[in-house]
Structures are given as structure tokens and as C-alpha cells.
Image (cartoon, rainbow, N blue to C red; front, side, top):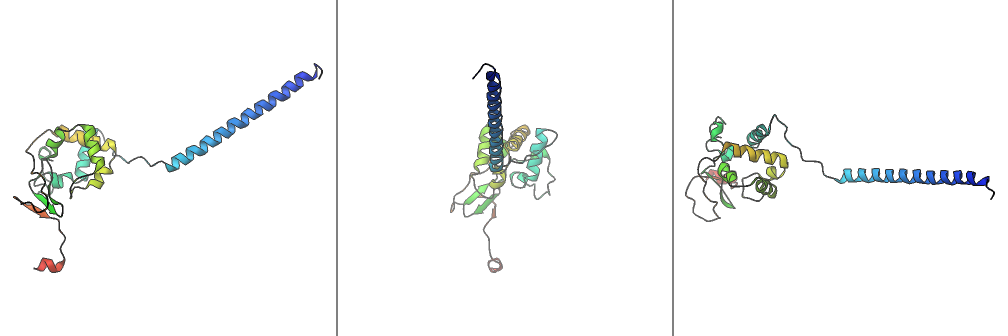
Length: 190
């Protein structure tokens, strides 16, 4: 090849190399986009969470709509919810009886006062406890909502006394209980 053909050959080679590089970049981009789409399609959607003016408002809202006061605040249901916030979540001596024994709605203000935030979030996500606590509702909450709930209860401060320890089936019951054993209409008539 003469010297005159070398620049043309170099230009052709450079064009071919540039074209090959462009094709490789385009293929990599398309492959990455395809992978990203597959990952997006397979990844679980982020957990919904509450948005409010501040974190304490979120915690207060979750306590209200989650029905926490219904069991964890003595007299709340009977008062139709007309209970001062300063009395919320102090636990109840009324037990819930069922095949699991008897459980008591704990004094959350005392329980959370002695618990680290991360431990509370883990406990909520583990969802292991006795009925009638709605564990599936708690396990479905986002970490940010659980943290807001924890911080709200901590702001209320410790108050009241501990509730009775749970009882196993067959243990002697010393106080009032709500019976969570379904009965048929015929059994009710007896």
C-alpha cells in the first residue's frame, strides 16, 4: 500500500472502530435499561406512609386511626373517645380471654419508655404477640410511621402502672375479661 492509501485506510479503520464503539455503548445502554425495567417490575413497591405537618402529628394520627386507644386506654371506648390525650395509652386491667389464655393491653407509655426505637420497630415488624392485638396492621406499617408512633408515645411520657402479665390457658383469672370465644345463637340462648 502506498503512503497515499494510508490516511484513507486509517480513516476507514477509525470510522469502523467508532461505529463499533457506538454500537457497544448503545447495546449496553439498552441492556441496562431492560435490566432496570425488570428490576423495577420485580422490586416491591415502597410501603405507604403518612404525611403530616410534623412527626408528632403523624404519631398522634396513627394512634387515633389505628384504634390503639380502644384497648390501651382505660375507659376510652366507653367514653366514646372523649378522653384527654394526657390519659392515652396507659394500659387496661381488662383482659381479653380466648384459646391463647388471657392477654392485657399493655401500658404503652411504660413499655416504650424502657425500649429503644430500633427494638420497637423490630418488634412491630416481627408481629409476634397474643390476640386481639392487630399485629398484621402493625407489621404493614412503614419504618417511618413506626418511628413516628414510637416518638409520639415517648413524648407523652411514662404514666400509670404496668398491666397484669398474660395468663396461659387454664390459669385463674383475677379480674374482668372480654371473652373472645365465638358462640352460636343456640349457645347464647342457654
